[in-house]
Amino acid sequence: MFVFTNSKEKTSPTIIGAGASIVGDVKGNNIVQIHGTVNGKVLGDTVVIGRGGRVIGKLVAKTLFLHGFIDGPATVDVANIFSEAEMTGVLSYKKLNITNNNKLECKLVCRKGGACDEQ
Image (tube, rainbow, N blue to C red; front, side):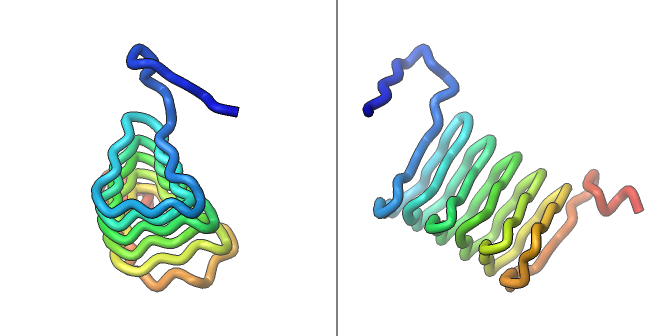
């Protein structure tokens, strides 16, 4: 089934499908779903990196759902890290949720205005 949108629809997700590989920047105004590989900068309001998804480069988002892999710095307001997720680099966040994960090899940096200010 194909889904078509037009320029008046502002909420369509940007989807990088499994098996797809992109070299360059990806910017979505709403949700960016990555199930393939992006080698470049990823910008989106909400970024979902699926189990087979890979980002090699900088990621900036309000909300991150990480099931796959990031190699590079990520700056997010809310990071949701799931059990199979992997990351190297620096994760800068305001709120961090980690679910049963022991594969993170990144530096965690809580930004001002985040949950670390509430301690």
